[in-house]
Length: 102
Image 1 (cartoon, rainbow, N blue to C red):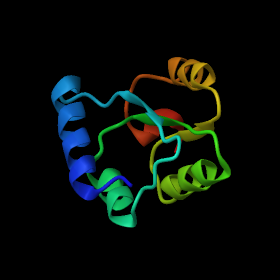
Image 2 (cartoon, rainbow, N blue to C red):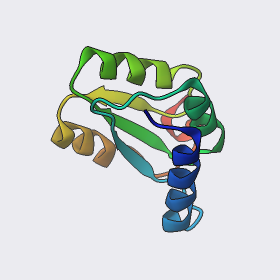
Image 3 (cartoon, rainbow, N blue to C red):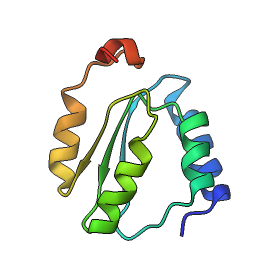
Image 4 (cartoon, one colour):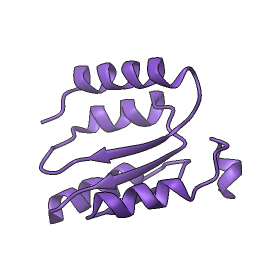
């Protein structure tokens, strides 16, 4: 189970690596359970411009749909990492919802 401290650490590291830019994010959730506090923190503090979620089970698919609720940036679910990377590659690089027509 992913705890809030894990989400805080991951977002802090991503912010440091991105240099303040909003970048596409690939998330592999195979068998990982996200708590509601983790999801809420990620949506409030995350800086991703788009998220491609990769999973393998029905539970993963449900969690990905749950993460998409109330999102202001594009998110898609994939069962294949290569397809997820391809989807992220074809997105515009602006980083705001306006860039995607949202």
